[in-house]
Amino acid sequence: MSDDKAHAGTPIPDLGNGAYKPLEMNVNRRFIVAAGGAAVLWPVASRAMERALGIASALRLHDHNTHTRLVLELSQNVDFSLFRLAGPDRLIIDLPELDWAVGNNGPSAIGLVKSVRFGLFQTGNARIVVDLAGPAAVKNAFVLPATGGTPFRFVVDLEPTERAKFTASLGPQYRIGQFGAPPTQVASSPPVKNPVPETKAAPKETNRKKIVAVDPGHGGVDPGAIGVSGIYEKIITLAAAQQLKTRLEGTGKYKVILTRDRDVSLGLSERREIARAAQADIFVSLHADSIANKTVRGLSVYTLSEKASDREAEALAEQENNADSIIGVDLSHESQEVRHILVDLAQRESMNIATKFAAKLIDELEREVKLVRNSHRFARFAVLKSPDVPSVLIEMGYLSNREDEIYLRKDTNRAKLMGAIVRGLETHFAQRQSASRL
Picture 1 (cartoon, rainbow, N blue to C red):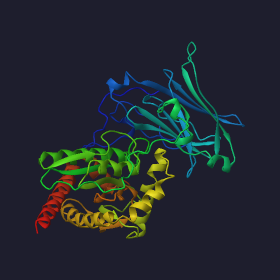
Picture 2 (picture 1 turned 180 degrees about the vertical axis):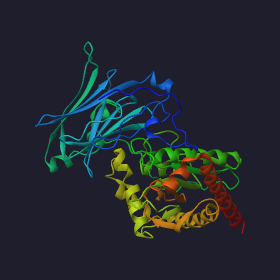
Picture 3 (picture 1 turned 120 degrees about the vertical axis):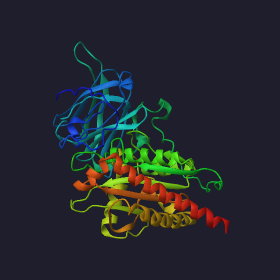
Picture 4 (picture 1 turned 135 degrees about the horizontal axis):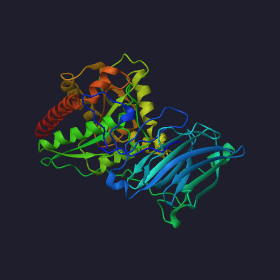
């Protein structure tokens, strides 16, 4: 396995008129996201940050018959912690933020390991997600000190275990190691991030700037769809979200909250709660999916419904709702929260507002871009299940279609789309304000 060299440039590659070449991305580092699969590239930290980070230079897997060993070579000693999740079976390894210089060719699937992904989980926290071939126990986890020409080595040994034993100790409350929590908290249940408050947020002031939460889909260890040229959905959505933020704030009428402003992983509930904490007036989630039929292209707008408008909408929602599994989020409490939200009358009002907003968006967007048939669709997207923030999800196009992908790579085309969204928001809020005066 060869080391990868640093590449100067900005964290987001040029999405302009030039052809996108995934092996020549103008980013600071490129690194592997799959073991036993195609090599893919992810941008990480800036040059200034790299100098302060440890470096991960190699990743190896070894099958020792009785156990499978993962070895990560590091430039310095690190704290770590790990825990396991099911559905699918995964080992989650949390480390300090690292400069990932592992290279383009990851290890093949071996023993108990099906694949390995790496990404920035949150600022200061790198995450490795190890997809398991079956239930596995952590036999050993330790860091070997550097000796002579040998770097520090982070080692994890996995051994087969029974399903019942595996499921009996799942989730962050069974975290092994110290990274991310003081020793007294390692064996206790982690605090709930942004819990859903039992009471509705205070009414929003009429004359203040409207607050728009913009959610760039995917990110970090979850790249989203991969386009026909190799570009990632997470890169397209972040670039589009930043353009939308600039356009909205340029009007002087809006305060814009981005759920993420860099390549970082976020859980679906966390995205919703960022909007709720900001008391957002509207939540807009941006995506660019892919489907098996590469001839299909066009934009669509989704709003929440437990009954999907069609099979494609249902499949897409199911795929997007699995994002938390990709980034290694514990979903054990999600069903209770969702049940609570779905019976909340406030959410029904939010759904009605979102439906009306979607219609206005489509009126503006159809002037700029090709829309799919039945462009307003309904599905049970988890990211749209905020109880008191009207929420829409915009599929800007299909990265599996060459024409859509080329269109979305171009800054000028995305600017047209974002301009149409701004006009849709203007009409929406103007009508809402007029209605409030009656």
